Length: 267
Length: 267
Image (cartoon, rainbow over all chains, first blue to last red):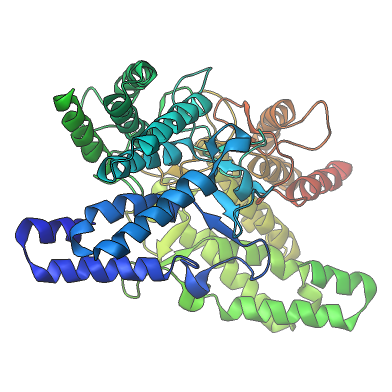
């Protein structure tokens, strides 16, 4: 993604080649991302995961200038179909699950019941960007609706903030950190809500934006040293005071603030 | 371990062979347990972990009848040395760290600063059993002292219970679940405290035993359906109501209650 944009900024063909090659490698691994390191035993409950089509929605637009038009369009259509028709489930009230079987069916196991609200909501602003690019207002409306569904589903009614992991049947999730409130979940949600409001003028997006915005700036901001905390416990108390670590890099907060700023400029 | 005891109970040579072979495979991997799947890049911060010598202390005694005497003694001595002289650090007040470098030095990184009180305390009743077997009261006294040091270090002074993970410099641990209270930590601690009291008559073991016992039975016991909960949050509220899962099997609670019962019978 970075090399794609770097090639655009510098005109350097070497960067373009790296980006294109990487994209091809990713696509070649769609059916089995971990290759022989896949821990699943062949033939026993083969699952496919939401992460890949979700991230490809974003990646495709970032390296659009490097791809042949037909190829790009086909990739975008496939990703939109997977995200909106396969992982989003009308029979569950329109929530997005993290894993389905290879034929696209719901599965009743830890992975198959897993819901990750932040992941689903982040995907929705990728879809809205695609909707703009493809001039498909229906897609934008649908992505906005899913955003509102997921935030209402994922919001902790007792302590505020959005859960990290949930189980669609209300069973205990496998992840011990399920009830923690994470920085990236909240900043990505702000983007989706703001884009949703900008593109559909649905006031519910603005109401939720203010609610999440207040939560995020009250809880994640370190008033002493700038940069957000990454990890709060369920009650919103700082769980780990580190500003950077194994999973919290300098990615989500600047991207999120930049995206929000750009949308707010146009409102 | 199970096959070793099964061979003892049944006299079946096949079980004995499986146990012996497995033990040899484990020992052959001491220096690089994950083989080519080791994620560490060769030459960059090679660490050795407390888990292997710690568990071998216990395993050696369980399959003692299957091993040549000289070989067994050498294994026991090596494990005792690693646990008590390499991972236990006098310069840190006698706490046990989870990782040191291959030369046995402290390392200043997430892994090198990691302390897992439950792990260290569990190892101490393995050492006490070895001390009994080898008729070494000095070893038993030392293991009892480390038990008391670790529980005092790992006890949450605000909400009670023993932390899952800590950082010896007070930095944020890498593990998001660091402040949770886990069933196995508490039941293994009860064993070490009770054996410590039985073998040294140190009253401090009994005082701590009552404190941990009260915490465990008040917080982990499901008063409606028998069997303990596995995961509490820092405040001692049930975080995951499941009784069994990916990491909570039927191992620690029965073993712990059995060990405590056997010691209490002799008191």
